[in-house]
Length: 478
Ligand code: SF4
Image (tube, rainbow, N blue to C red):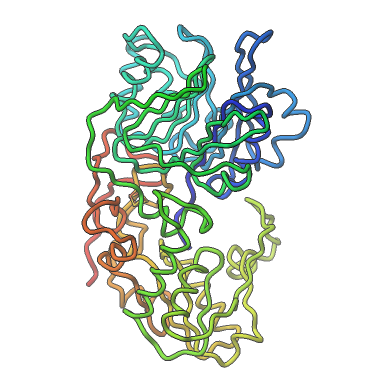
């Protein structure tokens, strides 16, 4: 059971029902954030390039009704699904952010975390700037508004040059739609085209390509790390690179867990990568067993790969309840392991008396893995062999993923054998970092692996973001 998700962004121009297409895009990106969602749209003509906005806490389907979408007219739109990282889970931190300033109306949504937010915020406050939220995304808008540059595009470039850390951004102005990605490309941002009845090809942007599939867009390419891709009023595009190029470090955890398996992320199939992780896991950690069972949904693709390489039959030995909301009311008389039980239930008929290989993508604190192993054993499994399709997670993330502090990550201060004892598995096997590089077909350090090796491409500057941080390293127990 993995880290919590991050955020998803989607944008489209020009399209007659832009906000409805964005709504669908956000629907496909709901897995990236369930706390809040928002859409900004731009209408032309009599509305004089007005930008409309609606955002609220909750699921996409609950926030956007027919009548709400009717209030978001126009041919250009951007949207966001939010899981709180910087800024906490407060309504004021929902995206998109909308400001009216020297460049007119400007809406922005952001996936990622800046690592120098506090420095930039302080600088802007000294200049007299005020903020409505604790969000780092509002800081980016502040930088644009207070830039010395005379044009909006140059102001955006000037702002991006000051930002450190992770950002995949969509910015909607009265005349432009802009997509930008930080120089390391930590978070994904795909670019596609969408054919329309009038023959015009719309420009579409999404955190993941699964949203393209839903709206009928064709994947063209990634917005490149460091690129500012501008869609102009005449529907032409311009690509700029405002910041000096550095070696990209896209987040490997997108392939381990965050992204949907039906997406192409960083130009490669998530499903194919996860299956390869499972195949390598089977070769590195073989065991005599009767069944390969995934922890749904995150372990399914890797479990398929493990079953394929080992020849051990794959079974859905645990069923996930897909209708569990963000919160649920626990009965007054507390039920042991309620939080896990309400989401996952073992299939006793399949597990009884069987030697089970249980496959999951990662272990964070170890407490959830322990409950799942207990659950499978209680359902009658004779043996439980836990296999993890990533290396031990030893470090926190500063680039937009909500992680516990390092002292709470079980692998940061325990050897694998101690983790096995804690989760009470018969055997435990992880991928090594080299195995993971192999699955990613990475000859060197093409990806960010910082939560596995602590090698941060951008050092955090200022206070640690919510849920993560550089805390004193606890003395190793082994
Ligand atoms: S630290 Fe981990 S989760 Fe964060 S960007 Fe790097 S690989 Fe991804």
